[in-house]
Image 1 (tube, helix red, strand yellow):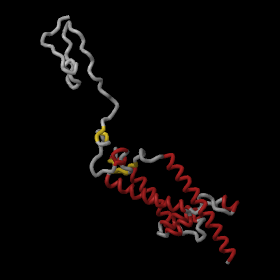
Image 2 (tube, helix red, strand yellow; image 1 turned 45 degrees about the horizontal axis):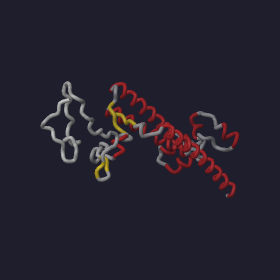
Image 3 (cartoon, helix red, strand yellow; image 1 turned 45 degrees about the vertical axis):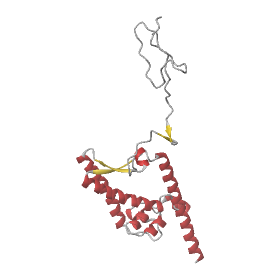
Image 4 (cartoon, rainbow, N blue to C red; image 1 turned 135 degrees about the vertical axis):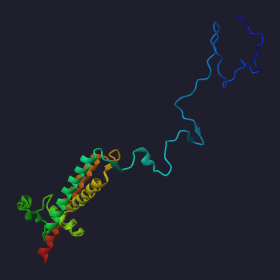
Length: 224
């Protein structure tokens, strides 16, 4: 091994190379230099207690919109002709239901309005004397289209919600048919299982409210 006559160690005993300097290249026939400092990966550098890498966020846009997106968006129809026909069919069906409900006269008992359509009386009500989970639905529709919100809720709260949903479907169907854009829900922000449980609980709660109001009305008539 030959020694370079120009080589001179530093005063602190180092070999004249600091950690920040690049390691020397290996020459053919020479020895491999000592390894330099190992870079540290997986540890984000911090400055003033904050990470240097921050999540991308557009100015003026809430953080939840940059992660999961908005809850409701307007999307163009994939098939303009078929999409408009589908929207027209949905709107026509919803409008037909609302027109039928408007033509019915709400029963003063807040149930039994469906008999004007030629349907038989509720078997559950005949056997038990208590309204079934769907008793008052038709009455709620007939009251809702007339703007009698309080009476519609008393007739059947779930039926009132369904009547509002039918109105929304009619409006959105007409909107899609005219504009060629549909309203899309972001199911990444909705939990379908939780939504089904909430709807089921609301339906049962509306049924319990209907039974309670029916019993109260009977008690009031008996006391009067």
